[in-house]
Image (cartoon, rainbow, N blue to C red; front, side):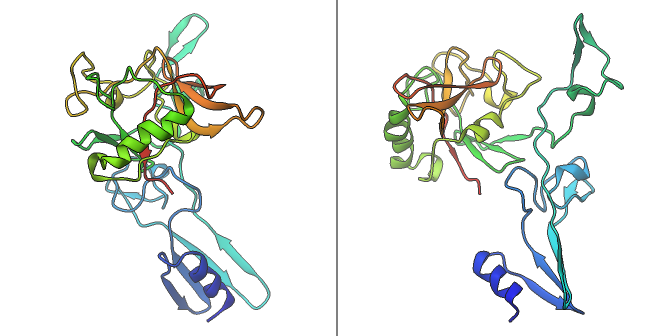
Length: 262
């Protein structure tokens, strides 16, 4: 076994699939960049939506990377992932809304994978780009209630611990999202709240995670990411406009748990 094979098998034991043909080594593996992008079999619109950079008949092809080895050098070509789009499709100037064509604005180019979510019918939402599964929020006084806020410590010790202790939606690996994960569900086409409809539908007193989806705009949402300049603070996201900030961990913010990710 070559050193390259040994290294890959050691570091990716569950992903190893090797075929040596004429000095070329073909390795089947996910895209090198961390989520988000779409893997094989997931629906797509353009090649840029897919880790494999190949969207055929609106379905992503399998991502691979190719390594060519000679006696003097090794060259590796690795596929990269597309970031999710911001969701913005409108363009503005200082006077207001304008035609997007040729402006070069975000609403004109709409770079990245189109935002796409699936309501799983069990109180959770799957982001079809990142693969992350999000807790829905309700307005019913339950652990999922959009009104309930926690200190940063209690976000872990109470909210996340309760979801895991009760195996919410059949899983016990819920966690507090990091700040980049939390920002990934912002939809910059919207405000008040700046989220897609999957996170803001039918929210009314008494609704449950099975009948509605709520996002508060009266408070921030905690992330698991500490502010390095002052470890007493942590990063959070305000979904009225979709922007991040930092706050003392002793203050109370809302919590939306997540599971999955690489």
